[in-house]
Image (spheres, rainbow, N blue to C red):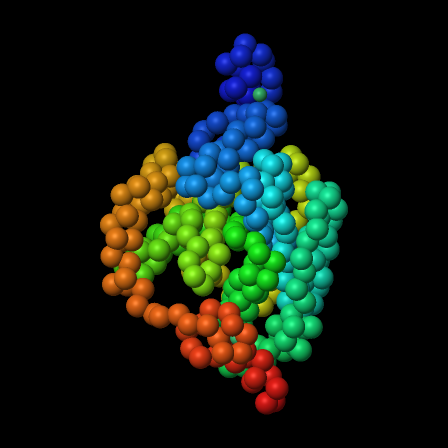
Length: 309
Ligand SMILES: [Zn+2]
Ligand SMILES: [Zn+2]
């Protein structure tokens, strides 16, 4: 391995521990960590995501992204509490909960855990069996519901998720291919709070997957490597990710330029006209009071269906 660029600039000869492909940069562990944390802090500040006195709820799946996010927010001095949903999907859920509790222990932080079986009376596989919708769609609806529910109930004003740059740039690419104007008019690293929802932030929007993989390794952050056994084999997004990685190998900096131009110049154009694209009116669920498109929200509808069966 070559020498660390930062050390070299200071006149020190130190072997690099990592080579970052996206930026063609050799760094030692210390300078990699410093750069990583500095970049996350500058993303938070640039998009005015959060201040030190905000109450942040971090949605933890147990995967590397959300676990790294919880770790780094704590390291940067933010008031960030962990939140995990036990979906009841066999070994996968058992292991996810285990790593979340391990990190809580390392950080000496509490974590809020919602058990779907206790809440709804059935695990995700059982619910999916009884309700004729795609499992991932049901699971997504339930997760979103409890993020908001737990944030409301415990007065968190911000929900943070671990979506990284690779996720963001590939979903953007996919949505541009389909000219999804609704997506383009609201997709941004920050979604501001309104009367229904708390603020939603993605502090890793400009942090690559490659950087996160190295950060969890150097800082010994526990996480699960297995994917949810119920998810589709090859999500479309994964294909877009691969295509973009291959392109950026040929044209240096292409992915970053594509995404940054969107944030700076394209998003504002669509966001100005968002009323045209976001025509759905929200209301409060008659049963639980949470935001809903219908009189009764999707989760209360699921509860009713489970009772009928
Ligand atoms: Zn160095
Ligand atoms: Zn409801």
